[in-house]
Amino acid sequence: MKLGEKIRYLREVEGNLRGMERAMTQQELVKAIKAEVGGTLSQSYLSQIESGARPHLTNATRQLLARFFKVHPGYLVDDPEGYHAELMSDARTLEDKLDLWLVGGAERFRKDAALRQALLTLARHENTRDCLLLMEAVIEAPGLVERLLEVLRPAKPEGVRKKRTGKESGV
Image (cartoon, rainbow, N blue to C red; front, side, top):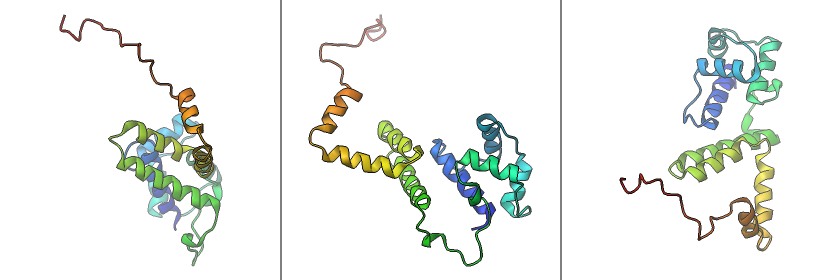
């Protein structure tokens, strides 16, 4: 994969993780980088990188993009000839695929706001795989899910009612 393709891919993933349901535009990326990591990058420079007109990044730009996208700076280079990403056994590749799968699930369940948010939160976590393995351990432990739900998401007591403002009855 070429550097420009990787940047476009990262914009796609970042846009979905941010709930945009699309890739971030180059201009949105430039603004987000400035706001979130304090660096500057022009949209025209980004366009040249993505189109291949500028095949190499300066070290400062590589570090800035790596910090923003939370990837290793070494990812932001062209892959060598004959390199096939699908053959990689690297744990980060697994994490990326898992995160994309969760983002896709969030898209499919977008009408269920709570489930959508849970899937996106899981996809954004630094170590998604460990979170899922922990969830399995919680489910396997008898009664733990119910106890955790009581503590972390307590139901409203039956005697508690919503305060009336008078607007409900048209007064």
